[in-house]
Image 1: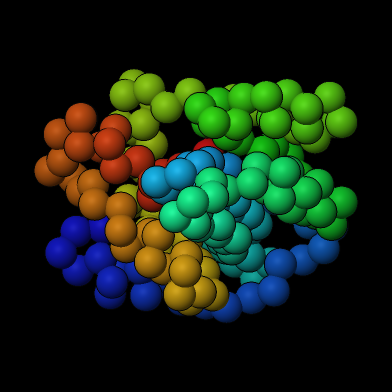
Image 2: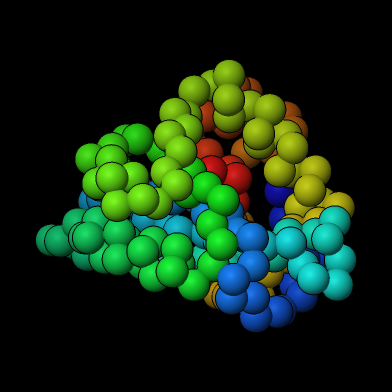
Length: 173
C-alpha cells in the first residue's frame, strides 16, 4: 500500500456485521509452518454496493506445530452454512486435498494458482480498490497486521509482487 499504507488502509475502516444469507465470496491462503493462514470473507455493503466489506480469521503456526487445516475446513463449512457463498477461492499449495474434500461436500471451491500472470494484475486492481476506499473492514488488529505486512507496491518488480502476494491472497482469492 506504499509508504502511507497504514493511513490508506484506515480509509476503509467502516465496521459492519456481515449479513447472514447475503451473497459472499471467500479467499483462503494457507501457510503451514512459517506463514499464517487466513480465510477472508467479503460481502457488498448493503448501504453502498460499490464497496466490499472484508473480515478475516487468521491462524498462526506455533513453533513446533503447523496450522491444522481441519480447523480451516471447519470454519469454511460454518461460513458456507451461514452465508450464500458464491465461491471459495484457494491456492492449491498446501490446500489441494482439503479443497477437493470440501468440493466433494458441495462447497463451491475454485482453484486459483498463484502465477505471475494472475497475481500481477490482481495486485494492481486490489491496490486501486483499497486506495479508493472501496474495500472496508472492521479494524481487526490481526487482519490489519497481515495487510500492512504485504510489501508490494506499484514500483515492485514482478518477482516482488509474487513473493509478497499475501495482500491479494487475503482479499482477492
